[in-house]
Image (cartoon, rainbow, N blue to C red):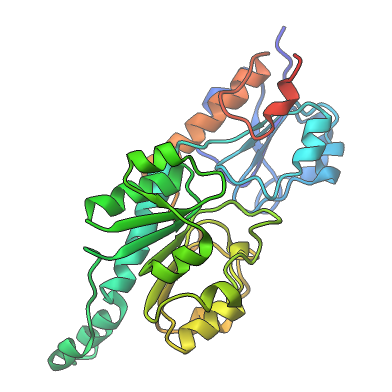
Length: 323
């Protein structure tokens, strides 16, 4: 007989998640805006981590019946993988569902900045039509796109860049040269990327090696007028260094969809108030289609585990070694 119990959602989820998981128990939203987390944790057989929810050792230890953790996305820097793995609890991720949405979102930020949509909007609003040629509108064709992190999203953005006749370089110590060559992408080190790219887009995971990856040293290599976009993780950036590069003209524009912490405090860093910065609230990977795919992929993986099988994509596959 299938074991049943509450499946706790740390944030709102689509109704289709409850439909998928109904054979195993009720999906209960807990925490902020929901029911008491402490009340349900001892009974929980599943846990769904949304957005900036932290799933640490304390939480996992407090759930002795926990059999699966679902992450509505791919980043697991806020999930204690070691604690989950000690209990042989799979952490289900959705590596494919939001790929296109994030890549399109990065391109949207890039286009917004290169085409100077913010300043042009202000000209029209303020009735300064005669000054329209004072705002220099840029092009992507013939420029170099530098992608930091050549995983699924980085590769999809490379495809979009090639369609726009951009030269594409990528930095990823684990990048596959054969895959890169097949896409017409040159794999380079970070210094070479910073020196040659007109646009830099970040899609790397947050690890001890990538924390504050883009700092004063890297930004000293960039050419004047470079555009920087981050749809990876907020911790990839040293915001003080980015702000300084924006003020002195090394960076012409910055687009951010991710922050550290999330959400950032009201007002946040001075960088956020600069007119050449465009900000979105970590939502570009949550288009209508992507949201549905993410929830479907996550729920299907969790259901497979709760039914006694294996999910297609988990962040800790080592738990199955020797099984």
